[in-house]
Amino acid sequence: MTHTLNKLDSTDMDADSPPAPQKKTRTHESCHRFSKLLLISFIIFLLLLKMLLSVALITLSKKYSQLLDEKEIIKELNYTEMFCIMSWASEYKVWSCCPKDWKPFSSHCYFTSNDSASWSESEEKCSSMGAHLMVIHSEEEEDFITKILIPKAAYYIGLSDAGHRQWRWVDQTPYNESATFWHPGEPNYGHEQCITVNHRYSWGWNDVLCYSKLRSACQMNKIYL
Ligand SMILES: *[C@@H]1O[C@H](CO)[C@@H](O)[C@H](O)[C@H]1NC(C)=O
Ligand SMILES: *[C@@H]1O[C@H](CO)[C@@H](O)[C@H](O)[C@H]1NC(C)=O
Ligand SMILES: *[C@@H]1O[C@H](CO)[C@@H](O)[C@H](O)[C@H]1NC(C)=O
Image 1 (cartoon, protein in one colour):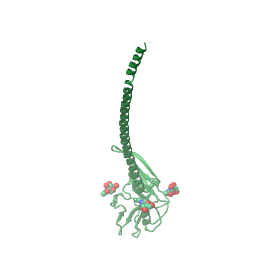
Image 2 (spheres, protein in one colour; image 1 turned 135 degrees about the vertical axis):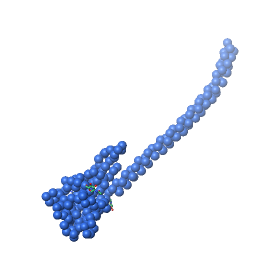
Image 3 (cartoon, rainbow, N blue to C red; image 1 turned 90 degrees about the vertical axis):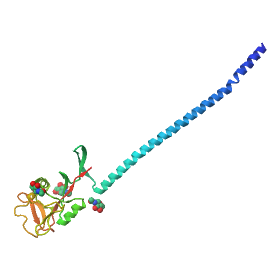
Image 4 (tube, rainbow, N blue to C red; image 1 turned 90 degrees about the horizontal axis):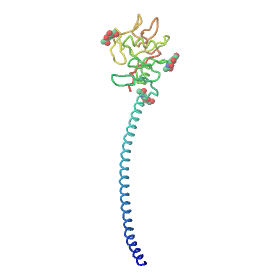
């Protein structure tokens, strides 16, 4: 009995003892495999992270350069506020803008000053705003501007006499005799070399002395964004 028991025990021991180390190596192997897998997935994770970061960096730097561009545009234009209208130019959406307090008409923006200055000071003021004294080449433009002027005042426009009644527009565009809006009897005096728009019985042009302190109308091209 005891012998058989012993034998059984020993066989049991024999049978039991070898699998024990085997189990150990198996867990060792699976542990190895697991850590390898962990390492690979960690590497993949790192690679993905790197890709994501570089994509994020690229978009960020693009955004930043866009911001810089916008800042530069704003810096160049100098205006704190603009009024923009969205319109369609052929297939493209465009924003056409005028600075705040300027009035849009056709492809231009117009500003009328309330303070008075000589013709050349007025032109300088327009120029400091990136504009020039207003140029009128059509009845539409004449009608538009006279609708926003105050009838009591006279406003300088960008027309002057270069001498001997040679009319010059500030933007160098040619003077067109058939697109002028002189008051009856004007221009009259040769020494009155600067031109205003004013209201008598109706609106029209008048020649005045260039040092006269008067209001003025500035014009600039619309800003397209
Ligand atoms: C000029 O005066 C008118 C009213 O007299 C006013 O509506 C307008 O805003 C003024 N323009 C500027 C630029 O101050
Ligand atoms: C913009 O502002 C600067 C400084 O205030 C001035 O020197 C420059 O002439 C302005 N430019 C325009 C187009 O108004
Ligand atoms: C001059 O003005 C008239 C009237 O608006 C216009 O029909 C004509 O084409 C203009 N001429 C030039 C050279 O712009």
